[in-house]
Image (cartoon, rainbow, N blue to C red; front, side, top):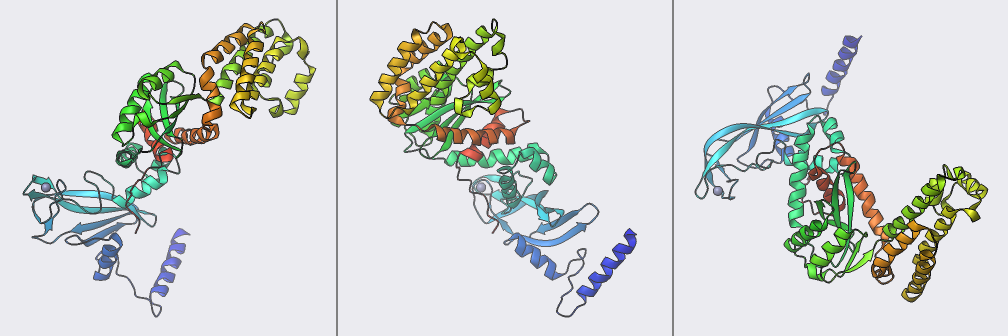
Length: 438
Ligand SMILES: [Zn+2]
């Protein structure tokens, strides 16, 4: 059956190739001049490099293109860029190139080491690949486009390469682009940590709020991360003294890190984190009350939500509870009142609201809520700073979703170095300067 089908296809091919107006290409083995010229043009080769032949192995689904140069050719030194260097000896090399239809394609060439007047014996520069890469520049550009859209592991599977080879390409281009990053003019910063792997390792991100890009990512979540940022920021044309607004959570490490390294930065405590502290206190009240009150079982997520976000089932459950007698319900009201803070139209009204809230909460006789109120008191100015800085939480959320995407793409790899590279790639607005498909 298969043979019959094959025969029919071959017959139709012969018919097509003998139709008037069609020039029949020479068979791949034993190329004629037309074929090599076509490949030469498609590869964009310039003298002294020329295509001298190719092998097509249909069974192995592989096309090998041979590139060579005439005797006496002169080359460019890969070390210093000096041209007109004579060859000293050669080494046979192979590079994976863009697929030839569904077949893997490889370039093969003997690459000279040159006698450079300045560098001595050095590898020659080849126009289609970086030194020591097993891929052509165009193949690498394709890899970079693919890893921006899907996990590296998936790309590796699709193109039949080991992922460690692809990570090497990713790191190369991201590091180059990162080295070119200019952060002069950055004055507003959001700092936040993200768990790299199941909460064991952390990566702290420094986000340029105005341009909504990650300008620095580093391991850890301690004060040293801010010191590392300040050094890196300076190295990329920024001035730590010019940072005027910083948005952070209430972690003492970030507070002291900012104080020590960003001397002119006013701190805004992130709204989401402030509400989280109150939420955790509500949950503590609920847990302790639930021990004596079985009705509270299964209500945990009701108290963590805003009334408008409750499902019908949760609403019904809440309505059925004797809320006026529950400590948890009181704690919940305190939380909702805290959230109302952020709806106050002016800084003055916000101050008055927070004062009232603090008085109420410190007199509520619920120990976890009183403790949370004291935490708010300690971070008073930074909480109220939001009314002046209006450092948008929405923006930070946007960055967070990019980071979550990066985590999904880097998943399964041991090193936070990989995660950082993907974070820069997706959220760093890098100038990648990839070779173009032109
Ligand atoms: Zn040189």
